[in-house]
Length: 257
Image (cartoon, rainbow, N blue to C red; front, side, top):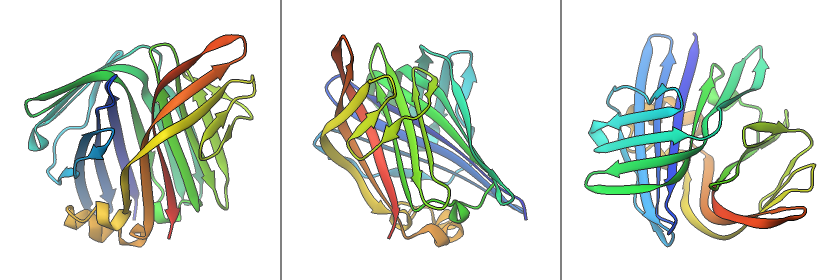
């Protein structure tokens, strides 16, 4: 049976450290069709529980450098305007399927309305597409993150396992020979991002995160043991001969447990 998963991720962090993270996703497997969406918000010291919906409604829409998403079941509206071009990377292509990643808005001015609450700040939007069953992804550990300021942005994906993969993008350009660890991202030109003052905003197994979405939880049972830890952190970008740049980092570690 053919399988496809499309997942949108959108976020914003205000100057003061209030944040919102949202997902829209669609799964097709044979004759099965499921949609899901979720939103989480909070401040640096605490994160609210996820709000979820399994109703079928439209994904984010793009018009030039602008993205809009209206999620009526979650009482959410998101508007984003990108300041640099999008970037697309095929992460993996095998006989089992492919994985394609696109940073739709690597750096964006975002406005997120959650009911009567509005968050405005810098943010990030990406889209992931899989035709490979998620439990066949050849990775034991996955690190992902994004760093956004008014002047520079970075995004990274680092997999450890049978097929190790490391991709780092700065301002939409892919950097060869970059390195990723728990607390640093190193670029070949001497630019280094250091992550510090981290606050956990998600710490759960995938099975727990999917618990409110019963149909999806059953479908994704083979990856229920995946553990996700996500942080909101401060990041300092040091560049040879230039003053350091400070901004917000959202990053995560996914492991099999």
